[in-house]
Length: 248
Image (cartoon, rainbow, N blue to C red; front, side, top):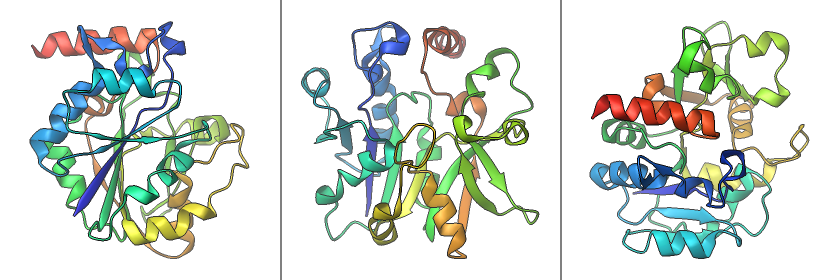
């Protein structure tokens, strides 16, 4: 059984909005609801977990009152690793896989979610996106984490943009932040994360480096950039509005 965790504790300050980021409207509809539609169609988890902050919990609960979701509170904004750790008590024994998504990614297709959830992670599988460059609308991806592979093509780590060297910033394979974990491995290793980085946060992506250090295989599936695009600023929202309008 797979449990889906949707990280939704972020604020909408970079979008000049009083709303939580996941509730910022995309063509008049909160962006998280596009993702919830795809999850419902995928049939992976009938009640995904939505991680919220104390500041945004009430408004998100109210907006998602018509959705089949459960809520978990992240008391402090200490990073994605900490957010997932807050869900430990909601991961019941029958769950074997944990799929982590972000509520500001509205374009993931049902088929892609089904594929990553069925990947039998040993210990983890992840989505990646390969770009030809960071020009035009693809500049949305420039500040994303970079996928670092060894000479054999094996994923060895993800380096966040703030921590990347100039050479690493030229890498055009980026991380959409969708990861599917073996539950037991995940729970055993969350406590290994540290916040020794430029953001002083606990990065969930550091588990990739830990898995590689244990000589474990990190599998991946590739998705098109349009599908993987997240929304973190007004500029990115405008680009997403245009892409969505072109599809309808």
